[in-house]
Image 1 (cartoon, rainbow, N blue to C red):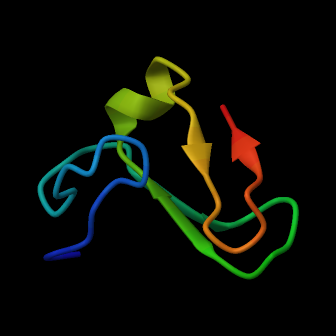
Image 2: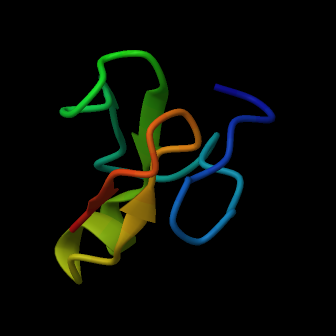
Length: 55
């Protein structure tokens, strides 16, 4: 996953544990990628396609 960044903190996740990738739960268009840290603290993310904000 080189060069891929967490949508919440913009950190390169190539060497991070517990990362996840899923489609936006609202529109299903954008790929949401989050690092384990942001997942554990429930950091917000925002879909650039539909403006959905999730924990």
